[in-house]
Amino acid sequence: MYVAAENAHPHRLQLERDNAWLQNILRGIWNRYFNDSSLVNTIRVSFGPAWKARLGLITLSEDQKTTYIEINGLLRLPVVPEFVVNVTIAHELVHYIHGFGSPLPRRYKYPHRGGIVKHELLRRGMELEYRQYDAWVYNHWYEFYDSLVRTNQDVRPASAEASA
Ligand SMILES: [Zn+2]
Figure (tube, rainbow, N blue to C red):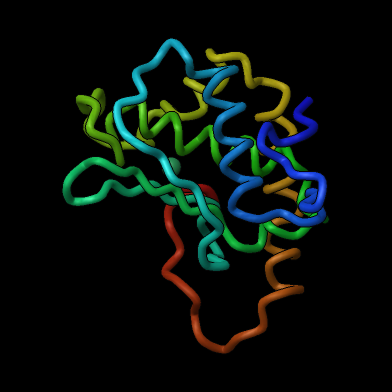
């Protein structure tokens, strides 16, 4: 499993999850599961809002030079298993290679229809992590969310699935 960041400095030990940590996870997942695909621009990953019904989001800059992946800010907390972060990032990378949020040719009309994301993750060898992720999200996500986020306002409209 992933241990130290390649560019880690002794005085900057990995004590918490930050955007550099995410970027290293993304690099590791790309190298392990997606390196047969074309990386055609810069992908930046960062923690985003604490969405209720979305774990990640992928968008493309106007000039197509940068893809932005946002990961639900609650996944910063160490109580969330790393496989949840891993699969959330991998999910967004599937969108990337399918041409959503990336300059690559779009391979499908819709990003999720027909279970294409799950299928791609399993095909690429993430079966174990995917099943762990799926069980954790199903069993813990909403309870976890509610325990941390207390608001009378709806945070975001719920999307069709817990992970986008
Ligand atoms: Zn998605």
